[in-house]
Image (cartoon, rainbow, N blue to C red):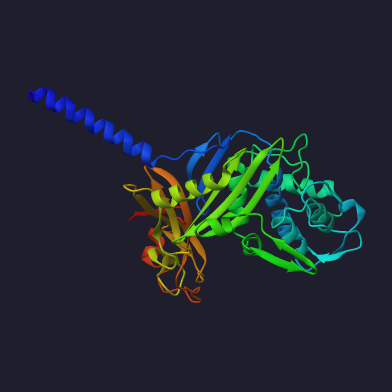
Length: 375
């Protein structure tokens, strides 16, 4: 074999090897739409028709639970009426039953009770229409631009739809609420004489699974939102119209955890900068990250961290007072930020020193000037 032929063969082999490696590490689904995100940052790790608007069936109930937790009281009692009866999946409520909102939420999220959804709506808002209005207000506030809700239970209806990306955003928001996390991660519970077993098989099939919600109607097909937590990172997965959703979610979650790690760019409490204090008992105060600044990274990616703060601030300054921001950049794009706060106090000086302000106060008096430091 000539030298030229050898190198041509070697190059072709290298290209084929790369292609096979990419295909082996790639992931695909049976879903019409799918999205995988990291919960805290919202970074999209996988997407397939993420913004397509589709019927979503009972994963609607994630929004129902969010609105109930934000506008209702968990121990508020409610007496079931005939208006709460509904077709489809059920908690088997009967008119005259008395339950608190928390118990209704278990029936909503574990066994997907359509009757529980109506009871939740009536318990929180009195009228279903008023509750649905809150659902849409919440969707707008979260930036769910490809979603609209017509009922609290997810039964097929005109004007009731969402995208996979929007549902991932909603689930990521919902998981910030510890009551929501506790309810959706419950495998089973007994309420009165009712035994409720969670329909979400991933709680026992998928490592680290903490919820979230299943759904199905003939028109919508199988819909599923899941979340799992491993090594300090929480991923949220959404599939719409997916006949193999259990396996697809496990594959997508494994893909995300294998391909990304959570990077702490700045730890909460870490001093990153300082600022001068005009008229203060301390000439300057140190500034710290108010909380962990984290972002998921793939191998080879690196964050640039910039601390932004004014050159000086007026006294008094109290510990915890927000003074600047810590920003993380990936490839020049801002991807995450947290507040930067004072780590020490500086009280206001009661008596001015002779000769007026200190020289550094006169030099740095414009508080709008900013100090940027890169780490």
